[in-house]
Image (cartoon, rainbow, N blue to C red; front, side, top):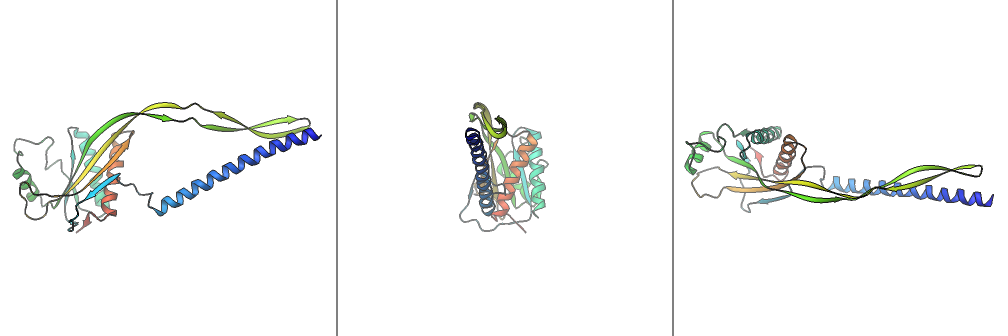
Length: 235
């Protein structure tokens, strides 16, 4: 009987130890979530940003959003998502594909041409979005430790314990995309060479599942950052 009791105690200690491990993990996760909420982790933001030091006039009445690139489908999706998010925040924004044709045109060649378009459409702000880098890297994903309940017979007793199984780690290729947004303040008199850039932000997207997913993720970060930081204020 003494041996049986010792085995039962051993299994009981194993079970109690496992329960405490689970409780410890739960407490740590809850603590991290609480800290994250206090710091605003729930709001998607850009990875890096820059704002012109002398930037003051932040109210805009009409902003054109431009997706820069040769992929017409991607441009349409990014512009549509950004405009919808801006309007939801009370910012008057428009898609630019109708006023700034893809790849330029014979009629739009010089800075004066673009200035004329800005004036004709009563724009006081322009935001560009462009892919500036993409790269593929090898990333190591560590294995996992699995705890599986197991029941054992010890004499006339059935005791509960846990078996551990370790899955192997492995390498996988991941592709990331770095996208940059730039805000230009085009209020007042415009001329070639005038410095109108007042804000820029970059965000990296890791393995987006689709073009739609990439657009939604980036434009949400961009608009959130611009609104939360007070970079763009509705007029």
